[in-house]
Length: 170
Image (cartoon, rainbow, N blue to C red; front, side):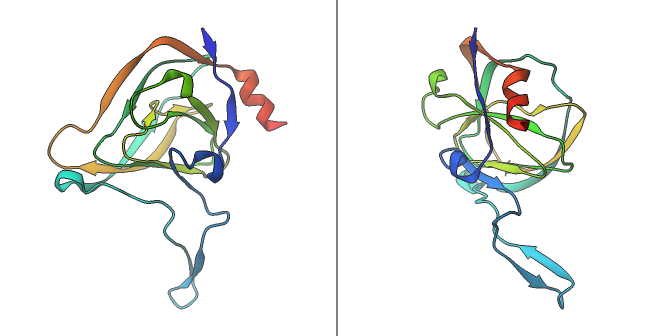
């Protein structure tokens, strides 16, 4: 079984797959007579293909046990899909570029703090990989007619190891 190295999630590293949703470095300004700080335009929500409309959901993810096996991937060909965590618990992200699924191009990222992600339309990703505790996420994706989720098994599973994750904390 192949082992996938876990990287720190940064805006620069995630560009091929979508947006990192975080406050650090975001454009912001005061509103509401100075009582609120607005962090503006954090992700490109893209859901209008075939008369789609935005959906706002809450997903509750169960924590995964180490080592984590990656045996399938999914994508949403008609719209982006954003995940905004409702806690500061780290979670993992596994992605591959849009187009034909190429397992040799899988990448794994670890979040820190309140980082969210917005997967671009068609980007392959693994379902939620919560760590340590049950974790809730606000999810913004496409509603409307027609299916918007393709799933594909990997020809051979990949593995995420705790040691790779723990090295990021050092």
